[in-house]
Length: 165
Image (cartoon, one colour):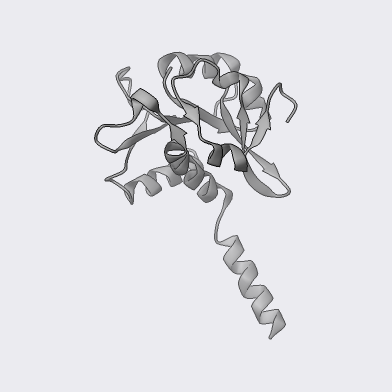
């Protein structure tokens, strides 16, 4: 009996892949941010991603389940500078590319992967801590943005003050 319970619990834990968890985190980030003047009037946050990564595809699926709360846009396909992205997810790690995203979307939370992402100017990155996905927040890269991250988000995140996370 113990073996059956252990195996079934192991299977359930494996049902959730990292990209699933990251997509849910991205969706929740919109609600764990104080957008001030950028709070959507229609109640729908804009989630943007550049390309077809597993995380962006899962995020698109999550958003599709909540059309009254969110819109998904693939910024690799849309050249419209007027996009009102609240959250931008990218797989880029080059400083120039991240800088270009920050210039194109100055009012958005720019999220990516790994410590190299925040070292290159990204605001929040996904990292593994004790084999669990956690958000890494770089406070320096959040200076001057027109929004603030709420304490609920900061309480679950690893804080990178000066690249020392």
